[in-house]
Image (cartoon, one colour):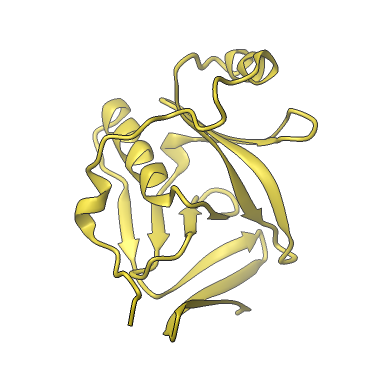
Amino acid sequence: MGVKVRREASRHRDYRGDYIDVLPPSLMKIIRKQGDDKVLFADKVLKFTASGKMKRRILIITDFAIYMVDPETDTLKRRIALAAVDKFCLSELSDNFLAIIIPTEYDMLLASTRKTQIVTVLVEANKSTSDYELEVVFSNRFEYNASADLVKEVQFEEVEGGVRTRIVWK
C-alpha cells in the first residue's frame, strides 16, 4: 500500500550528472592523477562499512573507474576500475540501497536517492569501453562481501508505510 515497485524502464532516462555542482579542483586533480578526465556522475552517497557504520562519501564515476572520496578531507579512499565490476544488486522495491559486486576485491554497499541513475551511468560507461554488459540483479535478498572474510546479506521487506531493510551477517 503506497509502496512503489521498481520498474526496469526507469533505467533509461536522461539525467544530469554532477550533483555536487562542479567538482572542486582538488577532486579533479585526484581524477586526472589517475588518468581520467571525463566525469559522468558525481554525488554524495552513504557507504556502509564492514562493521556496519555509515560513512559519507562522494561517488565519482568516470568512463573508466569509480572513485570514493572523503568529502571532509577530499582524499581518495578507493578507486575501482569499471572492468573489475561484475554486477549490481538492487531490490525490487523503492529503497535507496545498491550493492556493487567486485569479485577481485570486497564489494560496496551504498545508499543513494539516485541509485537508478548510478546504475544507468555505470552500465552505459562499461558498454562504451568493453564488449560485455554489466549484469543488474533485482532481488529482495542478496549477499555481498563486506570485507575479504565477511559476507553479509541484505534483506528487503514491504511493511506498512514503506520498506524495511535488514543487513545480517552470514
